[in-house]
Image 1 (spheres, rainbow, N blue to C red):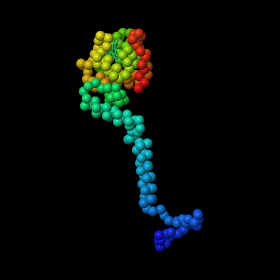
Image 2 (image 1 turned 180 degrees about the vertical axis):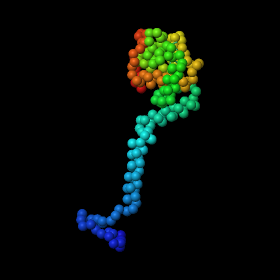
Image 3 (image 1 turned 135 degrees about the horizontal axis):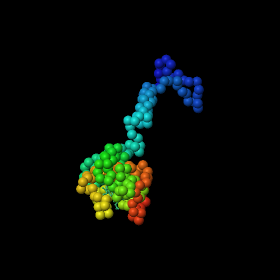
Image 4 (image 1 turned 90 degrees about the vertical axis):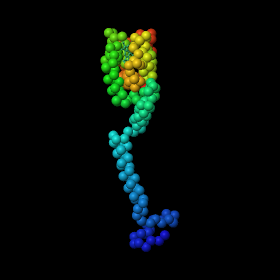
Length: 198
Ligand code: HEC
């Protein structure tokens, strides 16, 4: 390939194994790709690593799962299952709704405003690692819905929607995630240790 332009295809002085190197500028497509990849790289760095706009990795997965669970929950009128409630358990609106419900329904009367109960109240502490009826989200939602101990814990299933029972459960789990609080223990012969670690 010969090129008659001055300054083009001028061999450099060094020769390796008989191979001669020209001192030409890189082709335009290579320079352009190089510059574009740098521009793209800076954009990527800004949006994916430094900016608050994009959620990443586990956080993004959480958000997607919550969105999916919301879509499913909106379609289905039945009780929410464990997977759906867990996926929704960090959604701030759900926690807030559960907290508001807890405060305005009768829960406070028997479990206390902060859920730890006391000797003047009939319900057990809901913020320790000891549970009578289990500590999965389905366990907690079931007790809220169906009640327990001959309605000493009154069933809420007729008063509250499945969504709100899930929201109350989400609120209780978000409290439990803050760590154990002392309060009125339930009958020790019926309680089992089941800390909320999920
Ligand atoms: C009239 C009193 C009363 C009211 C009102 C009440 N609870 Fe209870 N709750 C109890 C008692 C008593 C128990 C223990 C039941 C048992 O001994 O099996 C209990 C148990 C529970 C449990 C299971 C605890 C465990 O250790 O397994 C949950 C969860 C719970 N209540 C949530 C709620 C929520 C949420 C509300 C409000 C919607 C509520 N309760 C309203 C008295 C009450």
